[in-house]
Length: 518
Ligand code: FAD
Ligand code: DLZ
Ligand code: SF4
Image 1 (cartoon, rainbow, N blue to C red):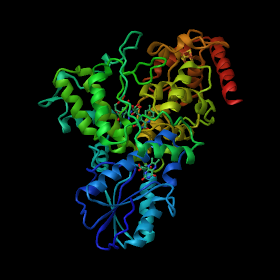
Image 2 (image 1 turned 90 degrees about the vertical axis):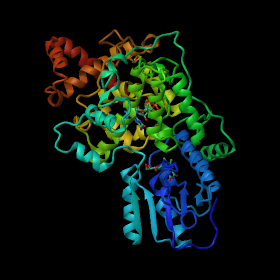
Image 3 (image 1 turned 30 degrees about the vertical axis):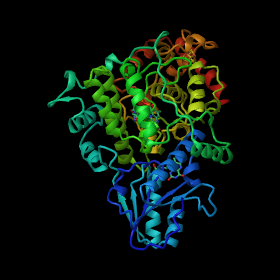
Image 4 (image 1 turned 135 degrees about the horizontal axis):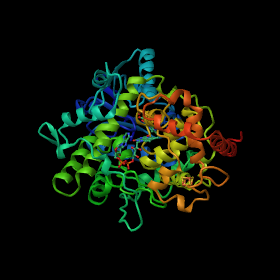
């Protein structure tokens, strides 16, 4: 897949990143196949800036190789650099240099990288090399950085709901003239059903690896064997066609119940009614808007209820766009925030799943096996535990960035630093997502099989989330007590006897000692 034809000087060098696997990216739309040379490169720097899950690396490399094959079949001049190619420089800028040494192309065209880190590296490189770098806005997103900045300017508080309504108006999705379909913007109060036994549980589409993927799996096994996660069985889609099949499978089988059971968790059921499409959308195999239009169509054809279609579309044109806006508005520096001054190290069991807490063991072991956990597991189980225990948010952020197949900093960091760990002090969310074991018990069946007792608040058998919840509130009272959404819980704390408070704090101390060796 290496272009060895005559040197070219008058075209552009177009760099396509591993999460830009779409023909609609702006760096390709006006490209000239007869003059321009495309560059795609598997490089150690991208594969190891965090120790990505093995399945994530395999997914990205295999999807890159399949996309490169499509481009070549479409007549493009493409240099594809494999990780183990002799001479691979190890970095994307190094690969640009190597290609320019052979073809003295003056202009480098790139669709803007999703991560600040890589955008800065490319800008630094261009300055040092004296090269012309044409960075183009990523048109796969609905809201540009400028547009988000304008929206945010002058607002005392940034809240997703108002941003989302603008996106609905702008896209026309689920709109009835100027009004939201069904008369309401948001049907979330219908979306909090716990799952029970006897439900029909669909499975996301599972694809059998072809020879390209098998070769990548062997490479990942050999080169990244020490990284977190189980590599085989590998079942992700790695082409646009297969990702479209996965979308159809979701719309047909899971979408109708997506809304009702969005917050539910069930032992042994990893996906419930979630779409498991985020890795495909983030890598470019699916376009966010086409996914939303498909879901809207299912609603108008009577194949999915409004609470499901609206809930799903809100996640994409609302949360996903909003998270990206927050990230670029606050970088650099957003990932270093630590409003609650949390300083404990990430517990070892986040890497092994070896813990007696059944909810955490389930979330972490499926993360290890599938590089996937759904939103409520990420937010209310692994995220909630590290928040309550006071784990350093940067370590939590690095864990999330490494372990999920859909993890890129632009979407992961606002979810972790902002939404889950409240490390930005409330820029993104109005209160911390802190909860005792009661929430997990209500939304899941994990507690029934747990060695801890969710009903016990203190003592050796108490569910650790219970004492940690009060310890978190007591520890952070100075910073959180005046939060209007927490006043009632502080009133409950204040009404407890000093003896009861001490029982909570004492049990919390023992839990922390057990997990952090304090
Ligand atoms: P579904 O439940 O089927 O939702 C549909 C789609 O909506 C998703 O595919 C995704 O594109 C979008 N979406 C839903 N929630 C969010 C959200 N909060 N932010 C952005 N998009 C959203 N999502 C990532 O894509 N990458 C991450 O690295 C990531 N890290 C997260 C870390 C934490 C602590 C939390 C709480 C959430 C994180 N999310 C992340 C958001 C969300 O959990 C995942 O998008 C979702 O679980 C992916 O599974 P799914 O495709 O089955 O989603
Ligand atoms: C995630 C990833 C990995 C594992 N490897 C590569 C790679 O070798 N080459 C590449 O171009 N992209 C890779 N990616 C995706 C990039 O990390 C991603 O483009 C940046 O983080 C910007 O979002
Ligand atoms: Fe999790 Fe507590 Fe329930 Fe155990 S009892 S599963 S630790 S919430």
